[in-house]
Image (cartoon, rainbow, N blue to C red):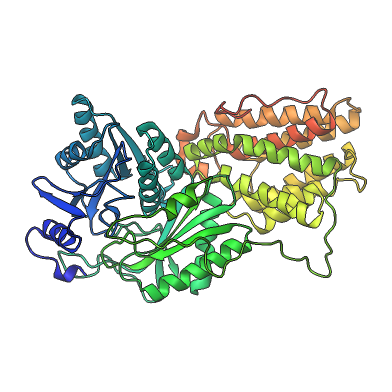
Length: 571
């Protein structure tokens, strides 16, 4: 605990103590301060260097040695190292192919590592950087700095350490590191703040029976304070948040259960089992579940969960041997967690073969389209909201596909079930209402829905969304695409148009794109005012994509086409 830090040169003294405990493995350079591994694998052609504020041990220094890092630069408690430390440590650790910096996304760390990199390049030493930004609590449009770097740093350092020992080049390691970061997300909670080394008191106070949700590893307050739930309910909530935030990929994960300093091994082991159960219940295979204290916040009473979607060979990199102060668990499969199998359906709901007609084709088409444009929708939402819309929409559609596969449910009915019951936030349930009404227009034989029925369903969906959320055309929400599509269907139904779905899709597209010129009056975008001007509403775009899918399935000759996915406006 920070009650007993030495009054002078605390970090240097601790570094000397680590080297003393691991004689022959680590040496300490005192001015400037850095620690260097003495036992590098001879196959390694790139030096790995990391570092950051002290107080997070065993982060960084615990992975110093064979199979891990070549040098570590510790700053003062919760303070970034100086660029001179990083520069000289990197020069000492550099190998024939240069040096790779592994940097947590904090302003001081980023700036000092960048300055050191400039100095190294000036000296002719090749250098690349992997920026770790895994903390989903700070995934907000309000933050210009982006997500913080937290416990996923351990995963990055371990996997890259193993890859470096296999002779990977600088470019290969940088690419691998960035892919690991992209597939990793973390969230942390705390029941008690860390002890301030200055005041010897908790850095902040929490009322009895509450938790801070989304805390940082420097003792930053969470994004919200919540009533303390049962531990199982808390792990379930954190698991849901992590899976919703994770990018698409294989359903095999590495799960890190990290203590923040004062959380006991007993607690972390129990949380690991709860996390494994939650993942398995969701069809996600926890190939590796690793409990322990890896990234502390001095003596904070709390824990974080990190999920990394595994790519081919990554599990082998984790289990590769190391010779470092920290001995990481190396399970081949989480104990007691067999590979998941599909749960049997309830007796009252026998499993049926999935529908293969137009309604199921619509679901599959919409799922492909949403997957294609998910990142673009997320970018748009980051400009006007909280940046979660693309992932929420994709997650809901993914759940609907799984539900249709397992139960044989109709496509729009599966969408309604998934979005009403499983997708959180504001837009998810609203889309669920729309899908619920559209499902009533789906004919039993799987053929094309009658225009009259579809017009009534679209109008009813709009009416329900208006009743619940109060949004009207012109408010810059999803109804700016839905209302004109419903009106077009009603008009073409009466006029007997040749391609009514195509006309409805075109009306939805025009309505969605027109939101770029509107100042939002409803939804989260209304909080950013004029900053939303020029940005089309992501929800309206998603509605337009749905009507485009309808037209493409039932009127392929005339349906509007989706351009390349890199176009920021999506349509």
